[in-house]
Image (cartoon, rainbow over all chains, first blue to last red; front, side):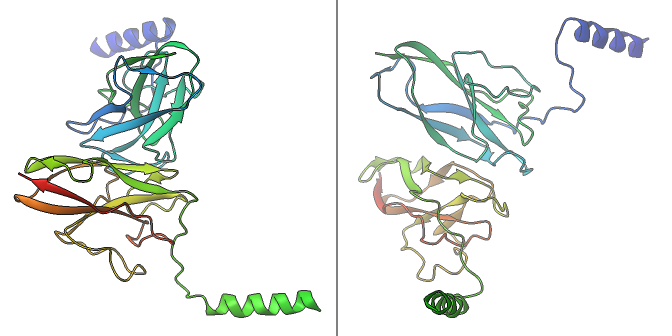
Length: 143
Length: 139
């Protein structure tokens, strides 16, 4: 009965477009904490100048994509979009920047206006941890 | 003829290079302290935030170009022999799990801190990538 129920739930999930993953997501390292070291939430930055973004990470390490090493992952910077939640492969597009070479900072350029930034860690397969290791979403203004 | 000479010279030069060549440094790679800054007064326990530009962090043993892992040198100079692995003791902290921040505790007084990057085998790159040596005072 319970199996049937689980199967039914899965079927519903499949029908409603919720991604169902074959593999279990990597458990988040205990106390892992990712944050944007710079810029600050609410910061106003000058247009036409590259914005340096610092990736802060505590109680966890950085490893390039494809590297399986305990308690590590690589950074993703989400721009003007929401975090995908746990156990999901992070898309690779202009709103989701991947740092699969183990980078711990970057520079970005954004058009004038308000923008949101958020860091999300993912494992060697680009899949988010469970629970997701993600920073507070901050808002900056380019002008 | 000139080409042959150059080739021969190249062969001689190559033979003279030691067999165990160090990992080349990525162009413009730079390691630095995001925090604390030089001259800062800190509490006895504080976070050190390690900054890295134009290259990536990888745990020890990871053989991927343009990566390395951090080492924090406390109250000591850079190793004299950069062909050998960075020592592993209380003056040389290894961050072989890819850490980019560390909580350290130091006794009161002035202390020097310096970052040195090393490759998969804990050997500094060539040329070595290290930060400015900074001084902090623990109150």
